[in-house]
Amino acid sequence: MNDTQAQEFIERMDAAAHRQETRCGPEEKMVWRRWGQGKPVVLLHGGAGSWLHWIRNIEPLARHHTVWVPDMPGFGDSDAPVAALDSDSIAPLVLQGALEVLGGAHFDLVGFSFGTLVAGEIAALAPPTLDHLILVSASGLGLFQGAAPLKSAKGITDPQEREAIKRHNLHVMMISDPALIDHLAMRVNDTSARRERVKNRTQARTDVMLHLAQRWRVPAYGIWGREDFGYCNQFEKLQSVVKTMPLKEAIFVEAAGHWAPYERNEEIDRILANIIDQE
Image (cartoon, rainbow, N blue to C red; front, side, top):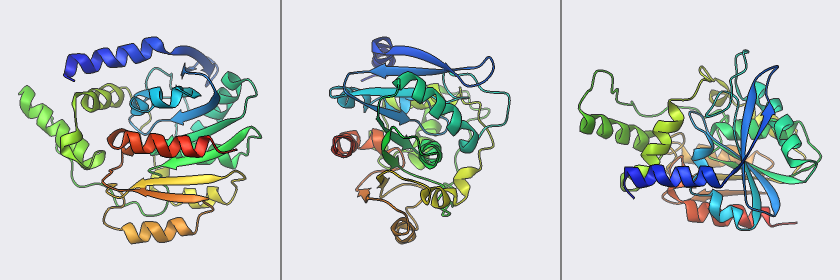
């Protein structure tokens, strides 16, 4: 898949979606996309992201489920409310929108990266129609150490050099195997990152998830890539912290970085389907 084909694939996926809007402020709108039919599952993207973070997972899940993916407030096509935003203030807006689009149906909630913080906040609010909580590459565990230094493309005009820098940064932050950084991954990252308006997020650097977990009343699951930049140098600490959480199961995926839903999409799809299909 070259760059043109990657863009065409994104456009086809977008065109195939049913689009719906909910309010996330007095005048602001949040955009939701829906695919498929069956039991609903809501997918929440990561920071500097959009619905595109789930681009490789939507079609497989939509074969048997109704897949709802919002651009959360301040990301992608959605408006940014005036107030400063972080996961704790975004979560009620997303929950309100989810309950509206779902029309009272029971659903499963899956968060990726920053989306896990929003999902964890939503689960702590105990919506009665939430059946399962699934956290992929969860942060907010008190183990934040930051990524290796990123390269700056400021002042770089050569297209090949700029692309090399972007690939390097995507490898450092998101995808453990550089060979899997294809044109689609590059296009998703570029398209989503430049539209993020939620800056200065701090919750991921705290242990907020450990406190939220004490308020969960639904079966919860955690999925981490063993090569996640946030934990690869302190994997034993991650395992120890995870054991203190009320998770029904913690799954560690081999040869996967932070963006495991993209890098190991088929394995993540199987794991999600197995959890979602439980009664």
